Image (cartoon, rainbow, N blue to C red; front, side, top):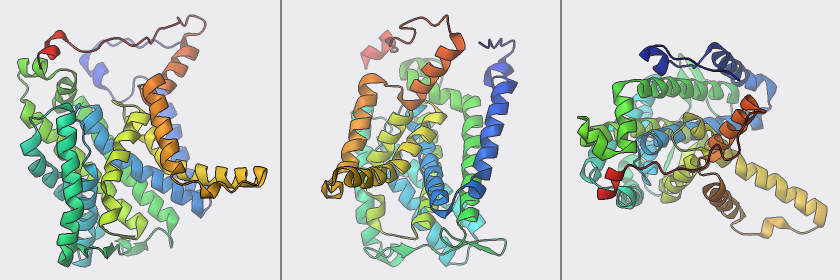
Length: 365
């Protein structure tokens, strides 16, 4: 078991708790970088899909997991990033400029359209953002001269320093482009949480009344969180457009927003790790179901492919089981297992028994 003794404020906000933890993350990074040399093209594509979902998960995790603002409208910000990226590319803007610019535009849109709903809480905020997601589909159809309407758009290949990159022609290079964006978002996200702004996000999540008493501007903090979150979601949407190749208004429907929220719940709210765990479930579950269907068909002779809605049903069952038995998600389960082995044989039963985390002042809302 390892004890971490913090002797300064800098120790409380450092990136890694101790050197062995840093070594494990460096080893994980080395494995991730080496994946294109270890896997075939199909599995490289699946790994790329996981990373794109992880970016979207980090965007929503910042808003919901670390600021406590439920959103069912992040598909709208992903759509904004996707469409603006392609529109900029078609007008001759280089990819290394169009991608971050599309993310910034999505972030600006996120701030503008969410300012009127920032005073809402809980289910009312979720309903308001859900309305934004629904209206986005209609807006994409109406803005046909720019978005292609129902037909949609086709994402051109990414050209970086004269090198043409796309999902099917150069899957390994495409994977590295997405991985670079993941690492950049991860470093910005992790360092943001160490700043006063990031700590203000957490304070708003834990208790808005207490945060306001400490001098935090609640509206400004929520607006900043929405802006950062929508920017990250815009980056993921732009990469998703290149991954899909062709897209229209149905690509970014309200189901995508709901799936994103359920994804971070399964992964583990309030943890960056939870975005990656949830992304693995969402991205790999369809492939697991497809393989299981073939296995069941070969074993029993029953054609399992005729069962409608099995993917949504299994995902819903997974969400329900986690909500009932492990509200902290996959990361919470992993944390408990790790703690058990670290403290063995001194692990105490019911160590992680759920406790009330709200303040009495919160009851006044």
